[in-house]
Amino acid sequence: MRILGINAVFHDPAAAVIVDGEIVAAAEEERFTRRKHGKRPVPFSTWELPEQAAAWCLERAGLRPDQLDAVGYSYDPGLVDHSLGGLDQKSEATRTDYARRAPGFLAAALPGLDPGIVRFVRHHLAHAASAALAAPLGDSAVLVADGRGESQSYLAGEYRDGKFVELAAQQLPHSLGLMYEDLTEHLGFARSSDEYKVMALASYGTPRFLDQFRELVYATGDGGFRTEPVDWESFAPKVTGGELSRDHADLTASVQRRLEDVLLELTSWLHQQTGQRHLTLAGGIALNCVANTRLHAEGPYDEIWVQPAAGDAGTALGAALQLAAEFGEPAAPMWGADLGREWSDEELETMLRTAKVRYTKSEDVAAAVAQALAEDQVVAWFQGRAEFGPRALGHRSLLAHPGRSANLERLNDVKGREQFRPVAPMVLAERASEIFERGPLPSPYMLFVHDVVPAWRDRIPAVTHVDGTARVQTVDAAEKPVLARMLAEFDRRTGLPVVINTSLNTAGRPMVDSPRDALECFGSAPIDLLAIGSFLVRRA
Image 1 (cartoon, one colour):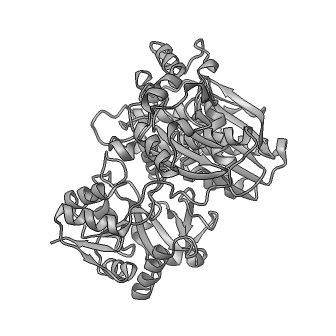
Image 2 (tube, one colour; image 1 turned 90 degrees about the vertical axis):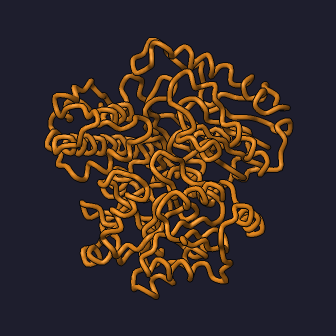
Image 3 (cartoon, one colour; image 1 turned 180 degrees about the horizontal axis):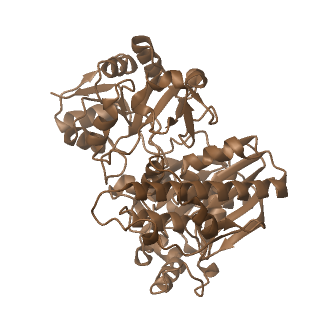
C-alpha cells in the first residue's frame, strides 16, 4: 500500500508517506514556505494545503500522485456539531465547507491524484494513531488532548492488535487545550503557537491560585472533565505590550499545576479501564513536557511514549498510519524523528560554492565542533535528515557550552527570544543517569523534564532552569554516531558530556531546513561556526 497523510485544517500543515508498511517521509509545510506554523489557525485558511511538503514526500518515496492507493486527511467534516460552544460560530461553516472540499483541492494541488481515494480520518483518531501505532511498544493505552478537533477536545482509549477501542471523549466547549490557549493570549503571546512560553514562565511562579482553579477545571470521574469559563482579569491584567508581573507568573503556575493534576486523574482512570502497562500520548497538550514528567513519576504506567510531532503536524502521519492499519498493512514503528529532507556532501559543496562563502572540508567535523564549543563558540549544526516536529534533535540545532551561565542569555539574544526561556541539554545516553534524575531515561525526543542532580547544577548552569530542571535529549551512539562522537570529544576536552541544544532558527522563523536556510540564519545572527555536512563555515 502507498498512503499519503495530510494535515491541513487548523495549523501546522504537514504531509507524510507510508509505503509497504514503512514510514518513508514526513515534513511540515513551514519548512518549505518559511512561514511559521505554515498558516494562520483560522477557518478561512483551511483550503491551504501542504503542497510542497506533500510533493517532497512523494518524491522521496519515488511516487507520482496517480500511484497512491489512499490519502488520509486528518479531519472529518461530517463530525462537526455547529451547535456546540468552543467553535468559531461566525465562520465555522467556512472551515467545514473547505474541509469537505479537500479531495478536490488535493487533486488540483497534486495533478494526477484521484480524489476518490481521499478518506477523512477523525482528527483525534489521527492523533491517537500517530502515537500508539508509531510507538515501539505494541498494545498501549492512548490519550489525546488538544484545543479541539471536529467537535471534541479529548480522546482516550487503547490499541489492541492495531485496532482502536474508544473509552472516553470530551465534547466542546470543555477543552484543556483551549483553556491553555486562552491563557497564552491573555499573557500577550500568540495562541496556538506560544504555549511553550507559558510552560517556561510557570517555573517562575507559585500556584497560589490553585484552589480557585480546582473549581474551574476538574475531572468528572468517568474519563471526562470540565473547564468552566475563566475570568482571567480577576487573577492578573491582560498583557498588552507591558511586562509580565509576579501575578502573571503565579497565574501561569496555577494553571500549569491544575493541568497536570487533571491529566494525572484522566490517565489513572484510563489505566483502571485498560490495565495497559504502556501509555502513548499525542495532541498539543502532549508537548507539555512538565506534565509528561509528572505522569511518568506519579502515574501507574511502566512506560510513556510521546509522539515527537505531537501537535497537529503529527496527524498527517497518524492519518496514514490509521489507514494502513485499517487496510491490514500496519506500518513498522518510527525509527526516529529525522523524517525530513537531507543533502549529500556533494550537493552541499555545490551550494556553498554558489553562495560564494569561504568554507573548509573537515576530516572530523565532530572533533572540530567539539573544539569550537570548548572555546565557547556558538555553533550551527546541520546534519542528516531534518526533524519532523517542533524539537531540534541534533539535525538542525544551535549548540553552545553549558558550563558558561552567560550562554543562556547569549543564546536568547542570538535567537531574539524572551530571557525567561530555557535552553535544553543533549547528553550522551550512557552518562545521562549520573547527571539527570526523576524523568524517564533514555529520552531521545526531548519530551520530558528531568531534575538536574544537585552536584551538576553549578557545572551546567546554562541548561539548568530556574526550578532546577532541564528538558533532556539523550544521544545514543548507535543511532546518532556523529552527534555522539561530538559529545564524547567535548567531554574529553571539558569533562562535560553535555552540550546546549536549541533549535536552529531565530524568533518568529521556522526551524532551518535547507542549506539556504542555514546560510541565511548564519549570515543574519551572531553565530561563530556553521557545521554543515562535512564542511565548516567560520565567521570572518
